[in-house]
Image 1 (cartoon, rainbow, N blue to C red):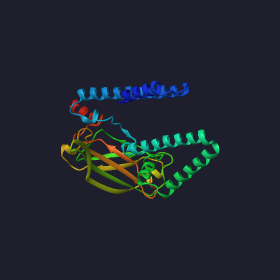
Image 2 (image 1 turned 30 degrees about the vertical axis):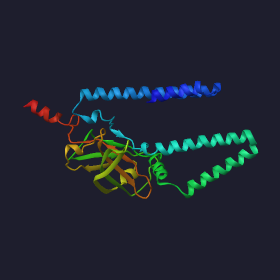
Image 3 (image 1 turned 90 degrees about the vertical axis):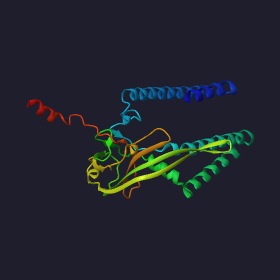
Image 4 (image 1 turned 90 degrees about the horizontal axis):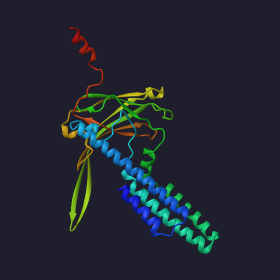
Length: 287
């Protein structure tokens, strides 16, 4: 898709319109960035396919790029539509202001620009949407990372994770830890000759607890013990297909509005930690 989009931008931008040399260079730069994104996507796909062939029964190795240190999850899919709408409005507004400037001059264009800015500011302050609040919360700077002791986290066992301390975290007395399992089911519904994909999300498991944040106040990592329930194999983390399953950990810094959310690799297989059984093996070998 990035390659096709980049080719379309290059063709329409250079041949379809009478751009200036500077605008043509901008189009070529955008096309080059899209091609780099396409190459990175192809490389990631090849890595995932290689890991799948090497470890077909260990999906945590190839379903996604799991790391020991997790960053807060951002729901970019919820923001694509509004961001594209805002960009379209900016494009239309720029074209209208440019027409005013060319036809009526700066004396008419400048008041129109100031009026639009005032209207946008008023709408932002008085009618701030929940989506904008969520975006500000998720993209808030200074959010902590989550360090896992092992990958994956095994169902039916207690697992230790750590909230990594960093400068700028709010000094709160307690944090609320919320662990959820969400089922996402995609269904294609046909209406006459058209088809539409509907996404149904159901929270199947939820557990909350309050934890003293003394370690974070002392600029140390905060250890959290997650007691994962016993569940069937189909309740493990599944990223692909029409029936997905996600385990999310939300850490709310009470009273501050900071609520980073992390997606966890939870599976039904216990992974042995490196070096965990070396003393027993050494003792057995010495007998």
